[in-house]
Length: 170
Ligand code: SF4
Ligand code: SF4
Image 1 (cartoon, rainbow, N blue to C red):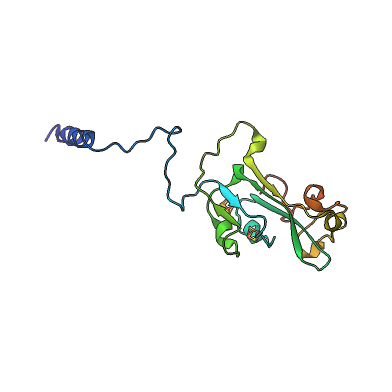
Image 2: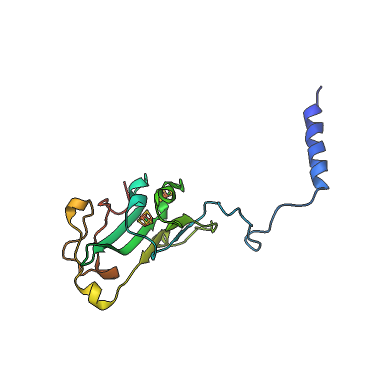
């Protein structure tokens, strides 16, 4: 019948008109999102083992893990960097992280807009007591981590990008 669709539509509008409103005045009112929403990232540099599984799992080269080895041969984190401009929010990095709880995980904060290009990056650095940071034993190239030769070590001195990919990913 001609006009039946129109009447159906009006019926839905009338029904919705009397129902409780579910729209929110964002950003004044922040949405109460489910805990598993994929917003930005939270990272725990104290539980991260610098294993680089997250970096290897990432299809877009978003994650760079920089590390050095201490005297006992243990990996020590220097810097963890994410270029969110290239992130797909696929969650493969979170899935790959072996720690419990996850050292890298999503958080519900989804407001990622920024004015400056450099604010797209998320960077966490870790520093150590001076005695340890002075002469770190750099990782050998054979491990797959081209830790920067000649680096002074420590959080700010190391330029060894573990994945070896140029800045900006693949
Ligand atoms: S969520 Fe982003 S950083 Fe993690 S694997 Fe996917 S593209 Fe890479
Ligand atoms: S997979 Fe987890 S523990 Fe390994 S480097 Fe990434 S965040 Fe750290």
